[in-house]
Length: 548
Image (tube, rainbow, N blue to C red; front, side, top):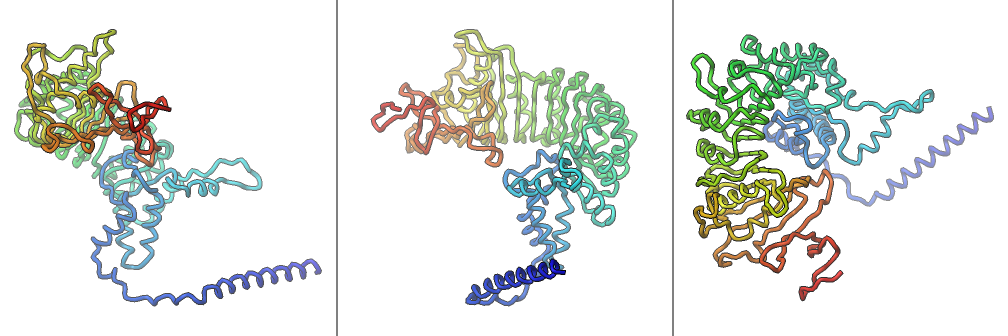
């Protein structure tokens, strides 16, 4: 009894001390003005559309209506899990906010593995399963737990399940929880996009149940891929009438004939984005008009990779029809049978093309015959990544002639809307600063000469050498009349070597500025605190002398 009485006295003394501390805290703040009384709630007068727009600022990814994967749709700054938590708190504020915030919470669901903030370190320690019997247990798999909670919620409330339009999750989560994903999407009838395990796209037997649920319960799917092993499923599309609202289709490593491709593509009347990658049996016949086959769909985005049998003739035939010509606005060519010196023909056939990407390794120099420049009034983005093996000592690589042709095209102002340019030539920015090349159309020394000209609009150039991993950014300003055809200190281009990484991914990459080298050219050197400094530690003083 003595022990119990001492414990009671100790607990009373501790509670009294705690009360004294809390009272002292109140006495310290007794001079503060009283809190204002609650006035009328002005948010009740706001329409739901305005509230939804405000809540979208709280949680930006809740309004992500694209069909990008979880990795492709990550925000550059902020924490997606914290944003979702804040939006959930908004839903509990009032009855007026609840339905609007709830609709945003379940429209585009995202399951992330970790918090992209300092909170993750604290939560990771709490997730560890520490017990008296097992001190070395593995930590809780947070994404799997979140997926299970979502599955339970949508299966208990069909109203919430009908609101889900997209579901994104990490790669390991979708690969290790196929059964949970199948049970979740079975009650999501309006689902348009979901991150799926890779076995779905190749008809892996382990994903058979999940794919059956996807085909039976999700008729509104808008993005799908077919890869090696899925030739049978792809050939059965005309008879299945499956996913008639599909908008994005990716075909990779399929052994299919051109006729099978044409028949299956006709099953998707709303198709707007098509990717064909490494399909050796496909050639120009997929574009050739044939009365016994449906026409090639008039898509908006076309990506051709590793298709050596598709040439300029076939693609030009497809673009000769008025509807495909007007619809196509993005074209990507990588390792195809379309040589880079024929791009002017494609640009002439695509009057509304906005983005063009060509990635090609060439084996011969630019043709010596007279060729017109690249001409387009709508092109805004150009990826011109032409590479070739390194030449012998003293001989420039064969790709250099293609970049000479590109510089001549830029100086002729035949691409007036071009804003961003990507090149795989580390010396391209410096070459663009010098006098324009003497030949506009390529060719030999006797080719037609180019006189005058220059950039008429600002241009952002991203350059990268064959042995570099980051894009080097160089903005160019046009030559003004006040400078008499010369760039002053304000319009002189700067080159930033951190263009490829956002601040949330790492860091302060090396930066540099282009400064005169004393011989009429420019030299890129690192910059520290706004003052150029060479990589060897040498500085230049006000007189122009170098010192350490």
